[in-house]
View 1: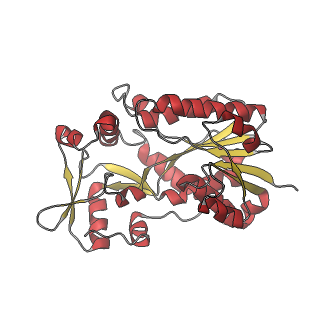
View 2: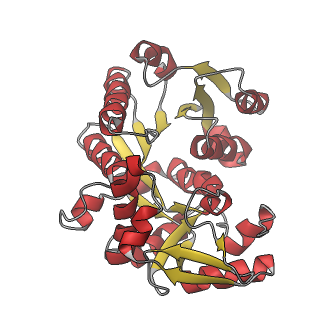
View 3: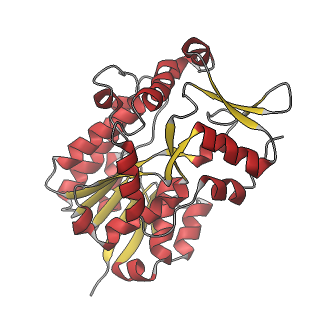
Length: 313
């Protein structure tokens, strides 16, 4: 029986790369699916690494609709995401990218779409949070996909554990004057915050690929689990040997830490987590259900920090 073609946009990125590598390495899925990786540069070392594992590589760009016909030719299942864009034009750009790809998917008679989505902050907050554009745009694209005559599933990743590695990204701990470190943000110490090692993406998408009918129309609130900030501080302390504590920061002070161009957007994202939950009121149940569906053991925060040899110094 011929293999179905799985086409992965962003194949050299964290999410797409995880999906490609997972399928190529899985004995069952690699017999069911051939993998086509889409990238803007076929000479990219990550693209070449995928090619060496058996993937085909095609250059295409969501901002160049003329490249999409060849990229999707023969595709059975499509995995894609739109990248958050800086500045005020993000919504327009992401919606345009998605429309170009979905229009071509309809022409090509693609059978299944898996989209990397996010929660709708405006809807969760009953309209109070209007600036979490990078969430709402993806939620809107999800709804557009659901309206198509194509079966679909949705992967909605939690906050990335990788954010602990970036000096410019909360929740990276900052040093205090006494040798300790502070996790400072809008949240209470008991606020639950879902976390994912984004390299686990393939474990959820792999579950869909193994049983697409079961997961048609479903969305994964994709997190290893929800952590309180007290738990995160304790784990960081244990892994690094440093004292890490959480501190709730007043709204006006926290806003002052944000770059002006994205201040409202980032502030409201944290307000979503504090006041409503990253995935809304049913977050705990959604995360627990999604974690049970993953095809393989998920990476805990402690395991991730040890894997990357996380240090505070």
